[in-house]
Length: 286
Image: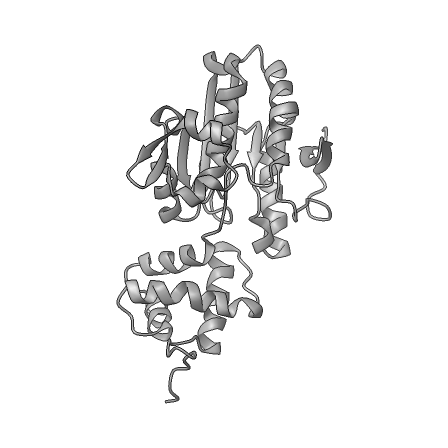
């Protein structure tokens, strides 16, 4: 048996066979493409997991996954480790400005009779995106106080959802995109962290949803933030997810994608609309 390859610091690296298995696992279970250029990233993310789970090498870790050890729990942890993403408050800003200046005022007028609003933040990571939206609702739209608002935020990672539910962030995290007045108004000190107020945490219903698996029942969303997740999918998966979005959202709903994402050549039923400096997507009228 050939020795396990190691880096300059002596840490075990991933064999090509193990990387091929990981690629197939992520594609089948989460619809994620992992290119050859991301091998170093997989080694970095999974080395910590291997140590935490008591495995001496990445080969041992992925071998245990293949053998089904942990009744699928270890497989879930591997997938979550590879899908955990960076995020920040009011990331890229323009979609949030479009939400505040255009989308919400229009929806408030359209939904005046029913006084209901459903928002879905898909792939919410550690919660900064949904809490950014909640702060916009609270700070700029007091007329929604009497409305029935269902706000669902989802992610594939239970670890990320646990962080999001707690709503506690480091000084570095709150410094990334969060205006100082909102930090003062909406957060409280929690030891070395800042925690968003409980009244704002209660607004969001955090759920585990794999976008490539079954979706739970939910009201048709008026607003969907599904940003910076399609970039990880192959083309067939992108098409399937966007087709489901089109079927699930309200006929006059609004979809926000990441800056490097689009529905063009993927879903003809969703067309781009320019709102200020942001581009969103809306269903084609039937």
